[in-house]
Image (cartoon, rainbow, N blue to C red; front, side, top):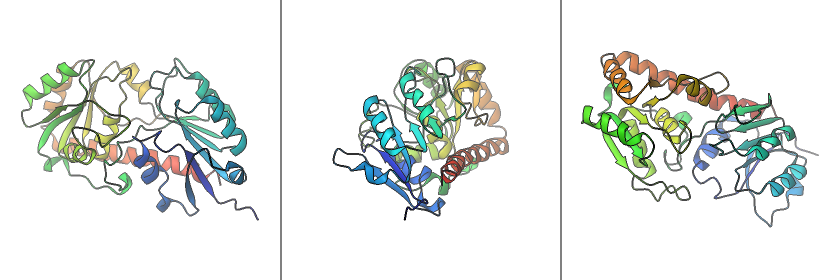
Length: 303
């Protein structure tokens, strides 16, 4: 007898070293499902034919060759695909796979470059592995705004506008934490500031400042800040911000400046109203949980 209440989640171990905790401890956390969620690590010796009658989900990035991915889709007939990556929006061939599944989740939002179908939905970047020491962000309790010791913080690589950003905020808020690092995407533990230390820093920060990455305004730091209860500060054109962080018409709350001096002035003004800042923290935590629960509900609808 076929067990129709069975979800298998396939992905290549090591291909998503940054997102693994977010995926396994939040999105596919067994606590939130009344049917089995089975994580299956793809390997060359796996007989995938035995899973073809189940409800299957495939997680992938562009390191997984498109021919192999198409082979998996043909054999497993996945009800959901989750595309990790493509900040630049130049991997059209992978987005074409939205035609081969019920629900297609993708990180990043690039509607000017990619034609999205109605079944294509935006998926949060998440947080670095070991950030929460294996716990779920859905159960995480962070410090209230009034109990935080740092005004602002930034941990990351200095590029784009980040040098100016750091200077302006460090000069204005001495009681802040700023660290320049180089990211090792293959090994989250190989960082100057370890992931669990990073959580402690953001959990002690009122604001986390976010300069542009290689291409996009979107970055892990924004979601790590939200999970830890820090309020993201970004600078950019509102049109770009509303597209980048659309999240199916459900944006988180940011401090948005036209430039970094403007962002600084807004932060200084908000520091006069701790209750308002606490409201921002609460709403962002609600936003985060709402988006994860929505993904989980879409998984449940596959059954």
